[in-house]
Image (cartoon, rainbow, N blue to C red):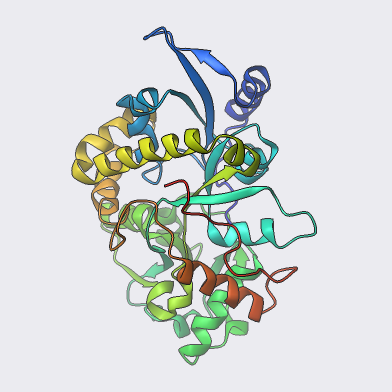
Length: 335
């Protein structure tokens, strides 16, 4: 459902060579402090953005080093973060609860576990040009929607449309090749796009593009699932429990810093990814500061009721190959 929209082929190729060379979990000498740090590889889900700021802050401010870790942050290969973490070439990475469903509901489930929620609530929904009747799901009838053609994606849209008196079969589906939501809407190449508001929604605000938007979690509480999450390799987690806890404790400090000082957090992200639009990063970071923990008791916490509610919905609607038992695929043990 979430195919990478931009392909940095050269970067990924060199990253893979680097991974092969360095191995999955060896000790590495820290050039600055001269002490031995444990090598940990963290793979992103996409190019750097404000979902990832806490990780970059933890590295920039030395929180990982204080935890005895040398963390390398890499971009994902074409197969995605899930495959790289499952293979053991990366110990941690970024994924999404809906994407993970297929990883677990198969004859050979991937050996990965969600160990922390990056954001506490689902910030995704459908965006459209303002005033064209798409402020509610029924308005998608007869409109061009850019789809990834994923079964979960389409079932969710069909669900909220039906509740609003609409018919998903009347939506015109076109392949999602959108790399710039603002341009796609301005040029009328599409009428509606599934976005994460903390990035694409903020981009529309910065561009002063009038929009209508509805969030899935506001229409059906079952859709308030966890997206994104940090995943870990199961064998690594079992054999390195204290190290995994140290990694997540350092990451938590990074995200807490991003909450306290969003402007400073934005500067760190821009230092790591100077190609990003500075105004967008700063505005997005200001939005995200209220999303990292929101109403949870602490950063990273996963509510079993919400996690299970979404997977139970997938089970009931036959959207997974095999049924997902309660509490599949997540753990709060390492927070």
